[in-house]
Length: 424
Image 1 (cartoon, rainbow, N blue to C red):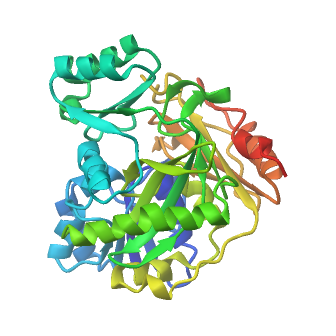
Image 2 (image 1 turned 135 degrees about the vertical axis):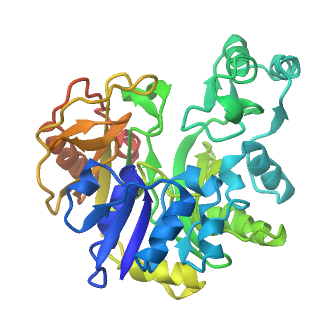
């Protein structure tokens, strides 16, 4: 069987790596892939990004199943295009992907279906937005309505910061069409967790829990990023909280999409904020797996992912039980110099150790240039360590990180700190 994975990041490398472990796989193509997927003999990069051309490639190569990693092709309707050609593909349609591609759509959906989330209003007029900020005060959260590659959310600690964020998006047009409307919502206190499930339209299959680290620097300081590391499982998601999230957030979302006539298929990611009393509220929806959460989750998955994906596209996820490595997996992101604002590219990378049972490195912003592996994006790679505790997994990851070299390399030294400080 041949499988196509769409995307070029660490999430896609991890998905392709896991799919390629199946004995049923003839080849896993990655479009367009990265330097890590290029170096793996079980994977083959395909230099195509246009959804229509990818559909033609899938027909020509007799691809049995396509898995979409990132949000941009989903928002562009790649699932609609493939299905129109009779091709099997796992992901939401363009209409369903609005849960991620439009913050306003997602907030209105949650309000309509009584899914717990922060209070909000949407604005396209600068002065009206400023008046709302003055009324509500700070801290307050400003979000670009559209996709902004992880740069569309500003947690403003002062009214001046909030106004500046609105001006940046609406007046200065710094985020283009993505910032033509802004969602302004109340600031939620608590601890974040990532809750990711697979959905086949009606059945829901939860994946292992995980927790991301959004800030660039140790102690959750510095600017927000696409994610500087993650670990799985997340101790904050207790069995009772897991059941509550399924009951109050995930199941109502899947049912709500069906009621609205746009059934959801694909990975559904609920970014949660859990307050001091243990109440979960939805910060955002993503219509794909998180990055870097995918990397530790895939490192822990023992079940053959190919079979799971087949059930997912055939509407039979209720027949699947997932088996997980009991160990903790902890991923540390290595970012380029200048990330997140102006990441450097072209720096030579060296020292990446071979994969072991305790550690695997997934590439993201890398490419092979004249035989040399170099940086090509903001988040360069994610080193995942596995161990019987968070502390051991952390040690395995950082022991490997210490061997890798490229100019300007930056990373956090405290991935997993929230789990380590929890009692017991």
